[in-house]
Length: 168
Image (cartoon, rainbow, N blue to C red; front, top):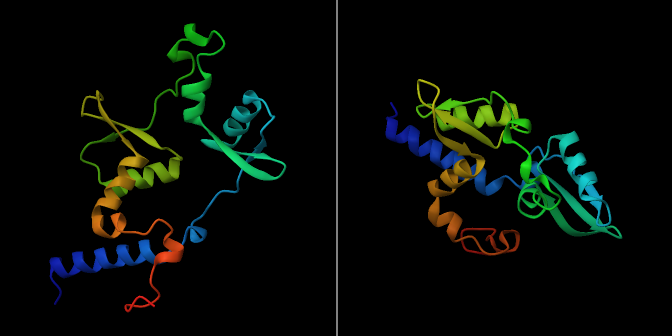
């Protein structure tokens, strides 16, 4: 008979094993959306909006020279051309999906994955906002499950992870 402790340990071992053996190439990655460095910002944002993605890769002569993200739009583009009078309600996402604080991380992650969300508002029983859960919060949570292992990874893990317990 296994105890709850044994089950929890096995789950931790399974998750840890998956984190350290599954490569990025095994994830269900979206294809890179690429724009040319000389394309307009409007064109890049349109590409992002059409595909419901948060970034595009920027190339020049077939080589990666940058990445253009939603954050770039917010911090470098938004207030350049007299957009200061635009009202939030005219561009917001109406009636967003929400969670209550008592929902599990797994449920939040599922809702994010299925809905394509990176942020979900947290509301109380009356529907009043109390916080926001983000993908970053969940990534940080997962990293905290194995702090020593994550912190001690070499700068280039593909080259630095030993092939055996002896390090060879």
